[in-house]
Each structure stands twice: as structure tokens, then as C-alpha cells.
Image (cartoon, rainbow, N blue to C red; front, side):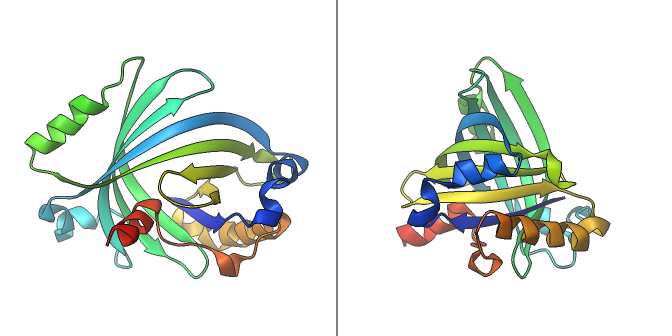
Length: 205
């Protein structure tokens, strides 16, 4: 399972956030150009025998299918991943779970995968392109990752805090997550729960 918080970075923190992350022991990991292609899954994905595979059931908020293309600007490598997500909203966080297949190669196979999904009758809802700077914070007793994102067609920059966990770890990890949020000078009450693709969909209405 995966838990995250997302915040709009206020102007007064834009120039000092990277320095604050490094002061907390954060180590730069990689720079990415990411493209997400969002699809609505086949209706059979909502049937009991399938959706029950997700530990988040019965509190699952929704399902979506995502094809992600990662262009690692630090190493020059490209990878694609196809994931079916189930997610739920907490008080000050979003938690998701996914079934994922990863395709790594020096060649970009995104067009081939998109064509295959189209042949299977999948309908693309929206495309999201973002630039991401990624930092690892292993010193906090939990493997947190902090990212700084800029997203095409969305104003501003965003910070996300990510962590993978087991379901029974949720209370402890949420506490550490909120502690880290304060150290980074953000307030958990200001968390943005909507994924980027939902923000873009609202703008297009």
C-alpha cells in the first residue's frame, strides 16, 4: 500500500524547500519527466471477486487505470508501467493500492501499449505531463520520499510526501507523516487530496 500527502508550495517556501529537505537528511534521487495516461477500467473490475483483492475494500473510493511513462533525466533511461489503482481518502492523506506491471527498456513503448489498450476497448480520459524532482529521506525511521512537481496546465509547484507501508502500519506511519509535514513547514490541514488528473478534468469542464 502507498500513502501520500500533496501540497501547493506557497511562494514564501519555493526558494527554501530544497534546502529544508537537505537539512533533514534528504538526498537527491533523480529528475523525471513523467506522462500519465488515465483510463476508466472495464466494468468487470468492479465485480466482487476482483475488487476484493484490494486490502482497502470496503472503503475503496474508486478505481482507475494508469499508463505511466517515466523519462529519467538523470540516467537517460525510459520505463513504462501499467497500474490498476484503488484509493481512499483519509483525514489528511490519500492512500492507494495498485496492481502493477512494469516495462523497462531503452526504447519507448508507450505508443505500442496505448494502441493495445485501445484495441481492448479502453477509453483514455486525460493525459498528465509533469516534471518531478525526487528526494529520499531514509533517516526518519521510515522510507519517505519527497517530490517537487510542476504540472503542465496547472499553476504553481507542488510537494508530495510518499511512503509504502503495510496496512497494519497505517496509524504509526500517519503520525510520522504528519511530523515530517511540520518539519517541512507545511500544515496537514492544507493537504490536497485530488490527483492531478482530477484537477485537470475540473479545469476542462
